[in-house]
Image 1 (cartoon, helix red, strand yellow):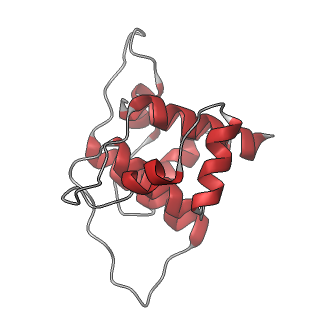
Image 2 (cartoon, rainbow, N blue to C red):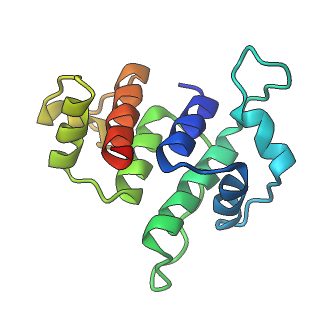
Length: 153
C-alpha cells in the first residue's frame, strides 16, 4: 500500500488538517511544511501528486505515537526506520492506539474481514521468525477501515 494512501486514511480517521499533519511530523524533528505535505495528500491520478517517502511516513507514525501517548523521557529515542512496509505501519498504529489482540480482532470483524489470532500474531513477529507473515494491502486497508469505524462512529 502506498504511504500516501495510508496517510490519507489516517488523516480522515482522525479528522486531521494539513497543519496537524505538519505538527505531527515536527514532533519527531522532521522538517515539513504545508507545501511539502499537500502533494502527498493528492491521489495518484491528480496533477502535482508526489509519492510520500518512507522516511516521512516513519516520522509521521512515530509522531502519531508521541501525540497520542506522550514522550517517555526514561527511554532513549528509538531510531527511525529507513524502510516502511505494511507490517511496520500495523505495529506503529497498534502502539499509537494501544490496541490488544482482541481489539484487532474486533476491528477486522467490523470491517467484515475474517482473521484468526494466529494470523494476527504472525504479522507482529520478527521477520526472521519461522511464523512471520507479511501484511498484505488488503489486510491493512481493512484494519484502517475498522479503526476508522471505531474512531469516527
